[in-house]
Image 1 (cartoon, rainbow, N blue to C red):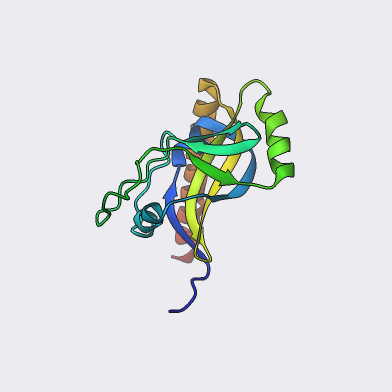
Image 2: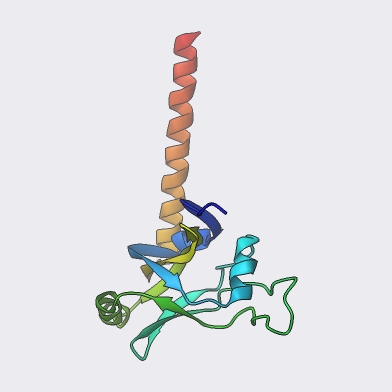
Length: 159
């Protein structure tokens, strides 16, 4: 069997970019059981309520839903168990200091396979206020309208 290469996206947390200012991102490995990997290979996972936390000098991923493997037996995993994140000690030490600041948290952005290994992209994030969310939406709409106007002008120019 050929070795997997590249990046295969499994799940993405689009709401995180809407709810948080992303300050820094980290690619982490995951400690998983066999049935969790098989379930992920079927493309089934949800990062909606997930968050990461530093506890006892180790990074942990909480509330990420990886459903039970359909052909699994009594060895199946529980869907929302906490999973250990694999980070370098220097990165964990840096994150301990950053997450203790007010309003900072660790949020999973994406879950994917890179070269056959399960990885999660975790972001150091600061929560947005309601007016920040509205402003971001307004900027996105303005950008979209400007692109539409420019493409309409190009079409008129060609005709």
